[in-house]
Image 1 (tube, rainbow, N blue to C red):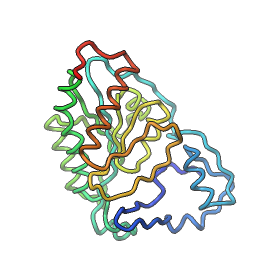
Image 2: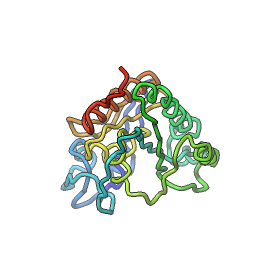
Image 3: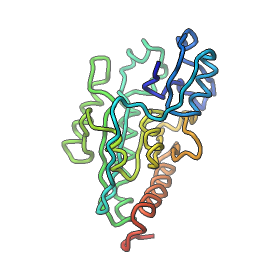
Image 4: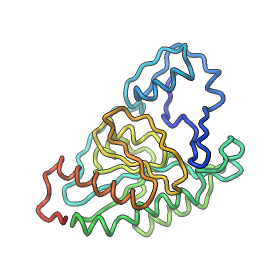
Length: 249
């Protein structure tokens, strides 16, 4: 068995701190379980103690295509999750609905809001490329997908086709932003690219499975998002090309 998604632990809220596991995981019986990270393997051993676990890095069902980020602009790749209607969230046991359209829209708005400050600091244009996790289905909130189309039409973001090779998109970016706690951040980690999980609600506890020394960070507020983004992009510019002559402190 392969866990194609590494987002396997339910959200923990700061208000109560209650931790839980997906209920049906306790009934899993499998000979060998293939996972991306050793940290997730430790969690899985508690849930499925009899399984042999193989940690092999990202499993995406296609081979890597490696790109280089451009030198004339800053590229930030964004990865969301589908926005669920409240009815769908209730049906699958997600309450409150952390994956609602309001939260997902705030996630995007706060990231896009970094553009002017980043461009002023680095004296380079900033572009945002968004790869949605899935296309629209009736169980999802249509209003969020309409908002994505609006952002694409206005040029605030570039909507990346679903079939885009994630290795190519991530390796060609200077920074990755992901909705908690989706799997693309682990791909970025494997490629040596900094990533940030951003919680626009400041309501949840960090719970990801990056292996140390991990480049995955967690932002709970717009201020933390700004500070972590500036620091990560400065490192990316230094590592890739050396600090550009027009860099503004």
